[in-house]
Image (cartoon, rainbow, N blue to C red; front, side):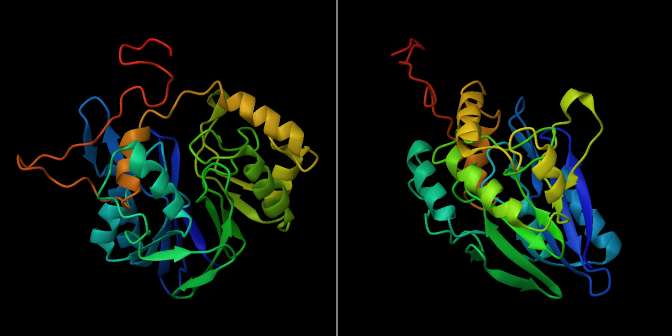
Length: 295
């Protein structure tokens, strides 16, 4: 049975998982983080290095870095880890739709929208191996079109689709996000899995200041999830999710994250002065003119 090590990035409330076979040492890493300091506009590899340190301490052989989706709230550590650990990368084949959407918004004319930045694109229901590990991709669109959960043994890694029961589900207000799709993904797909399936979430925001939690079960989620129980109707969830999303602010690292994550963790190329730059579009998320007045 595979083992799992969870590493928590407190700055972005993100869980990174190292899933490994203790006997064969075969390993995959799910949703790693690259630190980004907004005040100094600088990246650091503190969290990603913790992953490297754990891998080296166990003498693990990493086959893949697996992304549950294109994250909009933190930079992926995939670029750093691929170089350090000499491994491949995996994401949903639906990444192409996300790349097309943000290529125009972020004015990235050189961005290839074929997913070729990643080593392996997976489809819904596809199984692939990492040495002795067998991984199954389960498409769960809603938060984004490319969201995918991954089943390894009895463990399900849900990314931003399904959270701990006291925090619920992922937001659906990003471009091409869809609350109706998320209902289908959770209620009709994930909740059809065995009740004892272990669920490992992509974030834990520790509501009410409680201690960190990152593991639940499908059975507990169906009974107690405060956004979507097994008994929750589609209309009830979709209306609630849309109303809730209308009150949320954009993630603090939205534009910074996308420009790196669409390129599989590769930073923007250097300019002639040897510095890297990011594009931050002005007034792109609000119906305002150039001086901030509502149109």
